[in-house]
Length: 438
Image (cartoon, rainbow, N blue to C red; front, side):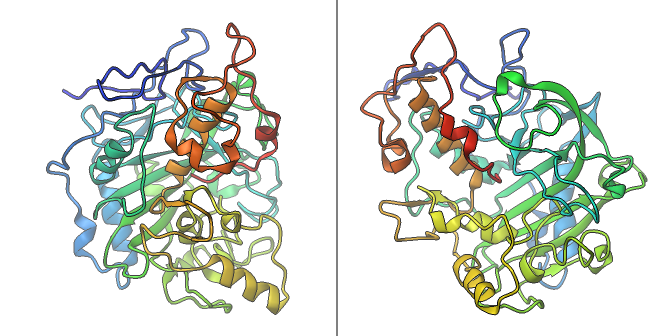
């Protein structure tokens, strides 16, 4: 029988002889009534992969991109992934794990499903005429190959370790479900989409907000993102793809409504045109998701991205920039690149590189560590160090925090909060920072 773990490090007290002890009891995943974490997701990371299948490895992702994505999706479906009683659920004994330390700060995990808040879609991103103001919430899991890497990173939850050269194993899969409170009247293809209830921010709050003000509200399934560690993608070692839920409901109303948006294994470096060779985009979605007023393409100039994503970015380019500390060059513009050929060329040269998994996006950042395309690890480390900075985490400062200039005010031990009887105050600059993709 599996052990259900709820990382979220609620009152961690590491007891291993060599472990660095700490205490953290300000998880955003706590139920407001009971004061406990009741999420069912696993953090009992495995030491071996066991018999887990990898049917996609027998499929050529370039020639049969839809079949490749479908093979990955089949392993998610076989785990019993479903929406039941307004919550996300999987079968007992499923073999998917979540990352530690995603449960602090304004974007931290909410208490009902474990969702984290992400960048809000801009006007016109989701569909023609869709307004701004919708929220986006998501949760991601790793299969056993990926969870083995999490086991080494979080061997001591109070002092995670990550060094250059550490990479996820071949056959690692991470998938993420994204939900939105966008009105189906504004996004017609979401009519009938599966709904969950989650503890999220008030309507219209698209940026950072105090988690204490969250309220139970309805969200709709929008898209499912998939990332695969596949060494056949020789330039990056990763293959990324995404699905959109498109109505009206048919079959099971979940998997039977997922339409592949695209898949890519490279960023088409230097390509300033609109015909890409290192990915595929579903032409059946033209006029619905892209090639329409408000959104000419999914990812920048024909690259791959989902409907919730920044159209000036792409799946691989976004995740390929993951490193600790993050490079300021890895934060893609959220406005408009414009039509000037020089601006387009600069944007492509700066952002759309083929970074081999385990290598740095920006080696000029002193002491940086590559995170092998994991924005979840980047977000987890950021939230852990923020908790240490505010006093929500009590104990020695994790070593990773000393490597990031953003946390240069930390000493040997985490800061003490002003009032030990009250929650640690979030620093004001957190509320001004853009929400991440994870």
